[in-house]
Image 1 (cartoon, rainbow, N blue to C red):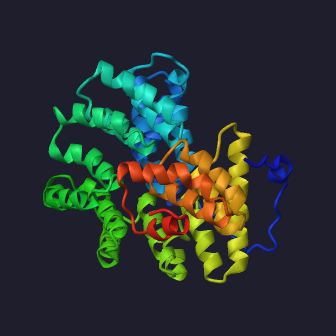
Image 2: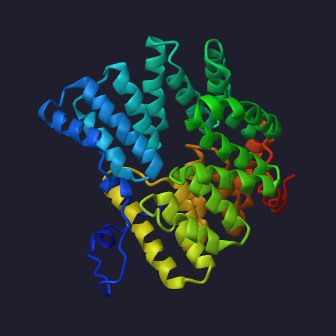
Length: 380
């Protein structure tokens, strides 16, 4: 991995004019959330109030997932600070701390907290769902299936769906997963409307892996009509558009959400592909600065984002491959896999991708975006 340029990251940037937009702040930071504001004031006077702290942290995590702004996760952590370093905090803190570890891609720490929670509360549905999904992201399907089995013993079908569908999609049974989503969608719309964007996003992603583009796009659009906030949906649809040489539409989708690093990455790629070189260069530099700032805080940037930044914006396939392979040791979702395959081809190092190719074969993964890449690598 490249050594960070600490000096460059700390140099001041002076815009050429007052017209230069340095950053678009999320509307959430200025929204009048009276209840949250009042609770923060109360917590300032009573920082060890557990119920108040967990309520505030949960709200900030919810907003962070919606906006993709890392500052919101920082506020959540601040609320939990009295218990953050404890080896045996209350279960309510463990669950929220696990979510924040997951945000930082510290999956082992998140799993450790979640395992303690389900040991103490073996029928905690949300903890089992989080536990199983982290194991899936890591590609640890054997352990993931054990967690899924435990959840299935007492959870409802729609709760099990959260674990089952992504697993089916990752292991070559996307059609089955899609059918399960279709079956659950009517009851979800009637009883659990907050789950509908998640369902539509997964329907879109599975349809895409199967090469059913019209269906995929219809699901993306329906999801956005319901809620334009979820950053994951925006990122996924932006990638769909970029892959189909529609950079202007991708840019329109994400350009007002650049507080989220994933959206900023797509915006920079879209601008570059659309020939808007100056904007692309500005956003590319913003990404570089964010990665360095994360390192200066003692953490690691999201390898999935940084490898794409190196590959698609810096045109440095060797660095991209190095970053993608390191990231793949942590998480093995479709985008992580694609990053390795593309970078290995561009860097002319097909052997580097062999462990990834073997993993796909072992688990029967099917995704039309992998087919041409595997063919170039000499696979099947």
